[in-house]
Length: 261
Ligand SMILES: Cc1ncc(COP(=O)(O)O)c(C=O)c1O
Image 1 (cartoon, protein in one colour):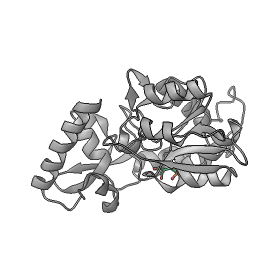
Image 2: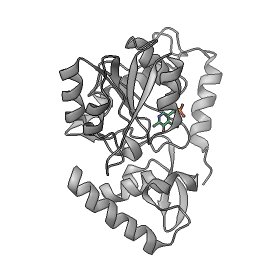
Image 3: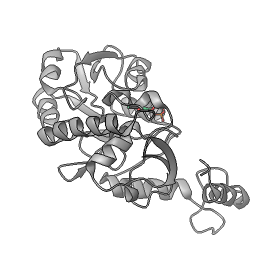
């Protein structure tokens, strides 16, 4: 299947033909498609957040969020060492200091190590929900309120994930998402083309969750169902591995998930 299908092309054409190429316009004008506005409303609703603001990338969203939260020169921000570079580089761009903390077996921020990393300069904690798995938000939130720290969730890899009934991104003071091409957007009825792991091959399909049956397949898809084979290496598998290797990895993942979730 084409990565960019007819639906995507039609949506784009609709905007171009409307003549409104900017995000602002009058909602009363039928020519104004207000697609960005609608996306913001829908994302806020799905996540359970009061507001959503669309920017051009997850990296820009991190920069905007850090600036909006007032993180600036000299502030320390505790962030996991295992993440995409943008979680850390955005802190540096904000002229703040990234303080790397350990991850635990869930591959997310270890609250115990966060406690060890707090200093009088700490301003915020930046957990990253890696590979679609929420970080331990109850513990991190408790630490944040105990020490008067801000909590910024990097949900770039976890759109649609929920933690104890709450959408990730709505638990801390702010949350950011990414819709880049490698991201598995897991919303039901997902309008985007997502990579989908099946039998050792990557297959591009419309929406991902509807085709996955349980948490395990979803996690496997999130971890290895990407067009870049390297990205799956977190769970020790790549899209080129045979089914036995992937099954072993799935077993391991399931045991870990049961223990922590
Ligand atoms: C954890 C994490 N944070 C931030 C980003 C940045 O998102 P974007 O590529 O949309 O700038 C990514 C994606 O690459 C990511 O995986």
